[in-house]
Amino acid sequence: MKKKVIILGSGIAATTVAFFLQDKCDVTIVTKGALSDNNSALAQGGVAAAVGPNDTAQAHYEDTLTAGAQLNDPDASQILVNEGAEIIRELIKMGVPFDRLGDGSIDYGMEGAHHHPRILHAGGDQTGKYVLEFLQRKLSSKVKIEANTTAVEIFPEDNKAKILVIANKQFRTIEADFLVIATGGIGQLFPVTSNDKTITGDGIALAKRAGAELADMEFIQFHPTLLNKPGSSLLISEAVRGDGARLVNKSGEYFMADVHPDKDLAPRFVVAREITNQFLKGEEVFLDISTVQNFRARFPYISRSLDKAWIDSTLIPVKPGAHFFMGGVKTDLNARTTLGNIYAVGEVARTGVHGANRLASNSLLEGLVFARRAAQDIIARPQKDENYQTEKQEPTIYKQNLPTLEELKNRAWESIGIIRRPEKIREFLAWLEEFDDSVPNANRIDFEISNLILISKEIARAALARPVSIGAHYIEEEND
Image (cartoon, rainbow, N blue to C red; front, side):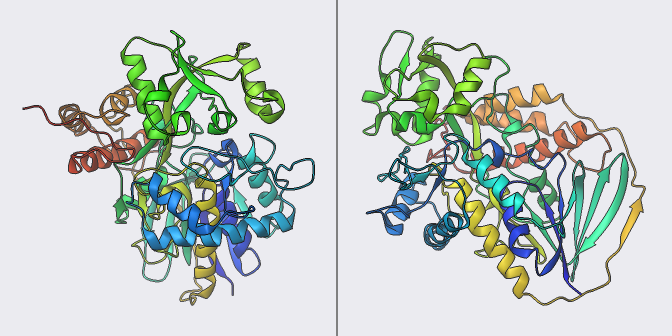
């Protein structure tokens, strides 16, 4: 009998695990939305890999550690750059349609904190969507898909994993040999984010309640350039700045010129913080794309989105927003969590490859590399139990004391956003203690809010525990 594996999530990491397991295991993907509801489908910038001419994995490794303020796990980072190059070469051979130059060679782009053009794109600014859909098409009919199904609790056992899920207002528990959590990050904790609407930290909260160890919870990357228009979550890819766009304020000042040697391509936390400082001075900030050649051809998705937003100028109004979570469920080099039969891959996992700040375009690569490692590890492990059950459940449903999602987002932005102040963080923690972060609850909004409350507490405590600014964690000195 084949090992049974349940994968929570539908992005690049989840799909890659399923791809490598599908012929040897009984695989089920459980996702609370549709297969396209994930951050991978929104990833514009590309995937970084040292596969181009005159580039090396060692150079990619050094850039990764420099961006991460040397807090990266060195072994995990070596795996990322070496096995990452190997996987990207395999995807090229498989036919992933990465963008090419007129002579047929791969068109490698440049992004912030890289010192070599090593970013592969597909569809211009739709890399995540192209790679994800390519891999999803490679999944056989043997892979079961349970969409619009939310995992609300997990129960680690000696020889299996047990998961409580809800679909169509009906609870049931399902069992498997192994559970892989691939539910993404925490972007919807903040009022401004590039993340998909479904990204509410569910997997991290589930793992924590089950007893898994978390790590690096203070490190949140805020992308510098989201479209500054009410209700918009459009990210203006760093690749636009890589192609020559510059950040200016409403006074026309090219302010990054004096902030960092890499100017507009400085590490993201540097750029996001300086834009925040501009706002605090009463300025507005724009991305000047007038010097970008063939902008509409290079960035078709962004161009279409700007058209829909009625932005027809070469000055695009921008603001920072929550983008990527470097912390999460602590894993080993094979994506195992501290709970025996449970794995974590993708943004939900803290593999250690990002340190204090993720290097641009290393996220898709991380998902690919450690998803394959998780699959290989699952295949190699013995099967200990062949008795699986699926049972209907009637858990106790109760009304929780919760804030509104809008109030939680606004307070999180003020307290654990780009610029942090110890006194505000403590006030935030005291406020959070008024609310209930337990489960289960049949109301999806309440479930997501309770998850975000749990995660907010972990982030706030981690931020206070690191009183010195480093990487994406910027905390002001304590007032006397």
